[in-house]
Length: 172
Image 1 (cartoon, rainbow, N blue to C red):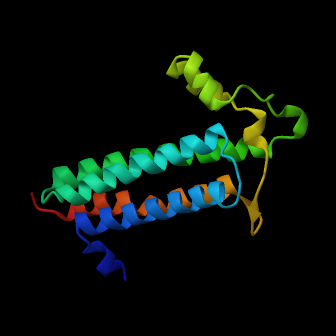
Image 2 (cartoon, one colour; image 1 turned 90 degrees about the horizontal axis):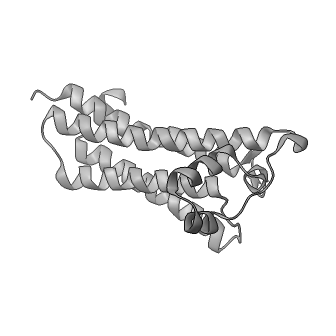
């Protein structure tokens, strides 16, 4: 099995990563629109990381570079997007693990902050956390949504790692 994974092309790894991103977004949008779960600011940033990773994989699949440089570039960009998602999901899980008296107070909504604050200040505000990000609205098999998203990002990391493996395997 490992030998067959090592033989996958840049396009195949990219399409696999793109398909998993589509699956992650379908679940997120399904839970929002069909399940009635409203995303908090950290959930939205996790979605942004999925979309950025999907864009990298889509461009990589269309471009399908033949040499090391292209595969390594797309692998690095994909890994950066996935790593950002892992960081946001981990931060979200940390906020959910805080005792109730240590949870930061809820701030204004993300839409309002984006209208009145510069992006740098919005990011700082979101990552310091808000009370709504610490709420656990849904659990499946003992994991909250950020936990499942973290697992999803870890699985998704296989695609850019596969691209980097393709880069190492290429000759020129």
